Amino acid sequence: MLSLNSFHTFGLSANAKNLVRLTDVDQLIPAEPFYILGEGSNTIFLEDYEGCILQVCLKGVEITEHNDHYMVRVAAGENWHQLVIHLLQEKIFGLENLALIPGTVGAAPIQNIGAYGRELADFCHSVETLHLQNGEKTAIAAVDCQFGYRDSIFKQSEALALLITHVNLRFDKEWKPHNQYGELQALGEAPSPLEIYNKVVEVRQSKLPDPAKVGNAGSFFKNPVVEGDLFRLLKAKWAEIPGYSQEGGRVKIPAAWLIDTLGFKGKTVGGIACHAKQPLVLINQNHGTGQELLTLARDIRDSVYREFGIVLENEVRLMGKLGLITL
Ligand code: FAD
Ligand code: EPU
Image (spheres, helix red, strand yellow):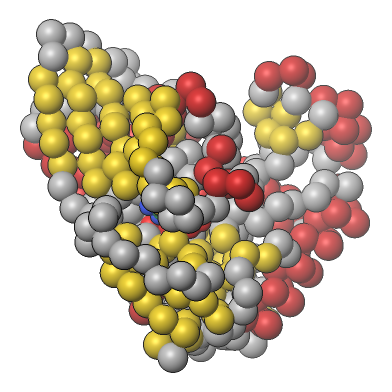
């Protein structure tokens, strides 16, 4: 058995039967149940896992310049934030809004990482995959990845055997700022990429706990998207409820507001707590256990459902002894 404590940013105590570091796409993979892991910043190992962890350690960044754009092919094991910095230094702009998101490049398409008004899908050209059962290598065009809010084809059960080996990104040379989201508006009309980068880093550091200091996996739940009718009903009762219009008359509601309104900020179950600054983030503040985390998360989910009639879904990947589980 091998300790997984340092392989997931939430830091719960858990073991795996086996761990293989994948450093070459043609490497032999053991024939046993597996879980593909990057840096574990969106995975929580709730208990011992009875399978093999395949840790993706493929490295390399290739940049090709074209007339009006750049193509960047990045190996899955590269760190996302280091890529953001590297491209800024190379004067290839676009990823500045997505600074400081933990984890690997290979995990970025899985939930179509997003922050501050931008998401991976805005830059993704294609995703190269290796099928771990039949060895087939395929490049999937971005249009076929079904990117949505914290969603993609890679989350579907048929795709769980697909290991992402490389992500191909495309950046137009003509760059314009995207600073409409919340705190970025303060940057005014024409901020530079570096100003956006610095602001995103500053805002994130002020709100989100640093996983190097306190165990966490970012937002625990997704922000729910509800029908317009339900939103209007809620608005009649809770005048201050925030909502952002989506396609088809639907409305995205910040889960942080729902959880905050129910008074969960700072609430603890054993060593697990609801973060006092950002209640959508659950933290492992004092050697918590998987069971304590599930108790608090289910209490939040059930309370939100009772009060608002909204079903919160976990955003993080929860691993049980046989594989992924839902809350
Ligand atoms: P892991 O947790 O290792 O894996 C996540 C999922 O991807 C798993 O299902 C795993 O099986 C799969 N996977 C990983 N690599 C591969 C691969 N090569 N091929 C196939 N499947 C693979 N996310 C956002 O979208 N926006 C944010 O603003 C954001 N902020 C965060 C802030 C903090 C403090 C933390 C801790 C997390 C945050 N996250 C955010 C979540 C996290 O950063 C992303 O989900 C990230 O993409 C996870 O990368 P990882 O390598 O750590 O993934
Ligand atoms: N809010 C409260 N109380 C609080 C905090 C927030 O009511 O204590 C409400 C406010 O109305 C605020 C709103 O929640 O305007 C949104 O808060 P915030 O801007 O912090 O963003 P979020 O919706 O909680 C999402 C992502 C983050 C991403 C940020 C910035 C999800 C699940 N989370 O958080 O992603 O960094 O927006 O774009 O979509 C992650 O996925 O792990 C993650 C951290």
